[in-house]
Length: 459
Image (cartoon, rainbow, N blue to C red):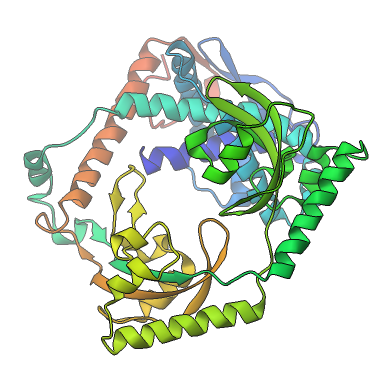
């Protein structure tokens, strides 16, 4: 999907939520005498909608393309065109996707504003009300993106077309390819002490006892104590999920549950320890809630793991065995040990590659790699892996390609992406222009002299 399109319309929908429903609550917006300024099809655009986005844009430092007085209502109108077509074409968005997106956005807002209480004060709503209001805006945003993806999904470019596009382009106009690296990694998981495991299990047994006695609910305890940030705020709820998408140990217990009133036995997964409660089963999918608790790793255990890695590094440097053997036989990293420790990256287009931009690596890995020459091995360091666990690691810089202007022989994919992206933008632009021609549009006279991005609004 076009990063240009994604960024543009992501901004639109979230800004429209934040301020579009707050006219009566915000003094600076509430003073606006509302009126219909545009009509697109059977959808009206209000003056308050435009003023809301203008104020938020000023606060966020946004830059509109052209005069904001013209650009803001035009972008709202464009959204209505896409959304109407998405409804006609039955573009679907799953409830699971909506829930994940809303929760992620709320978490981001809380991190920016400072706390849940400040967010509620700012919005003059409870968190549950904010969440409910966000769902429809997020659904519409996803439908618009789905419609755009449908329109551009078949656009591509042949090698000959890519060459023709760049053959006469000045050197200073060629795309710049950032530095890329290939990295191998060996990790060691610090050992959790048995006393700490016993403590976590005792907590979970206590939760189960309180639920069974009716002193509280599973959802309440999940919100208070679960260490899974993606589900804790929803009372521990996981939406309908197939067995293959879950940790095997978790799935075995979850799919064995039959009574929604009962709490499962304690189950250990690669994420920590859980208790699970059944909500519903639907075909080969299950809906459950869970509470996750993670044992705390002691400083002593971390130091022991770092020391072991330091010894492994010394043996590799002294050529007692190669890095690849250490990664295959010693590393705890399940994702890389079958590939000689080589880390892999999944691009926005879903392509799996071993090449990383430094910004796409985990920050601790990027910091270690940035100081290495090709073939060198880092000192041991501590990091949190993608599963949220503390691990210790050493990395080897396998290859580095310095940042440079793209060439057709070395960077064909980069140059192809530029051509395809340009064609996608042209396709979407032309689609909007054609839709305007066949859609009833009426706008206030004061907008008739605007220089719009899309032609045809003034009829």
